[in-house]
Length: 231
Image 1 (cartoon, one colour):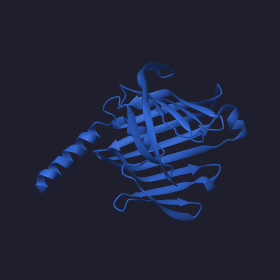
Image 2 (cartoon, one colour):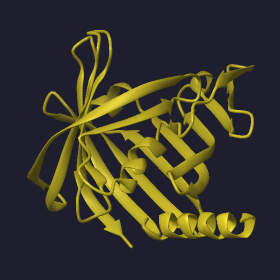
Image 3 (cartoon, helix red, strand yellow):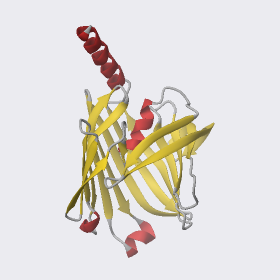
Image 4 (cartoon, rainbow, N blue to C red):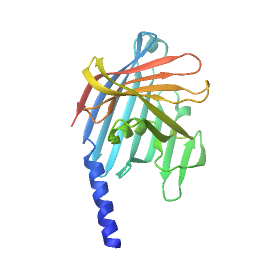
């Protein structure tokens, strides 16, 4: 019986890993109030049952004249039957190292160890929690247009629960071409919560090709694909 369970588990892991691409290279432009303020370069790589993600956001245009900065997010972990399972997360800001965050995910203990501003804290780690960048690539594991998608997400310091609801299937025109997409929006219960909407390319492993963020103070930020390579 134990051998059978082990074989089934290995088969599930193999199926999950092979359902994901080997490499993704994506370039996005960041727009606020119709003005381009930055660019995002992202890479996702899978080596068997492990993955790594690197995302670099650079200020451009008018914003660069005021704040010449970049933020790097990195995630490393495993691929299992549930999709991505982060083991380490880093956030580094070139212009302000006091905002740097490092987190490790101890799944055996069910705890996240967060290091921020010289202090170390342990935070309860719900099952299948994603980090700030892996959460976008976890959508690759969607088999169909699920009506709702629920997942816990960590920014490296705390863990919050997110629920996305399916809105529609829509053909989306972008600088990288047209994509048939699944449109999801975050379900919020308070005006103090950030709103988010994401458009996933159906024939490109559900990779986000457009993301819109709205904060309670009225700031809106759009991240739109300009180049996408997948293999």
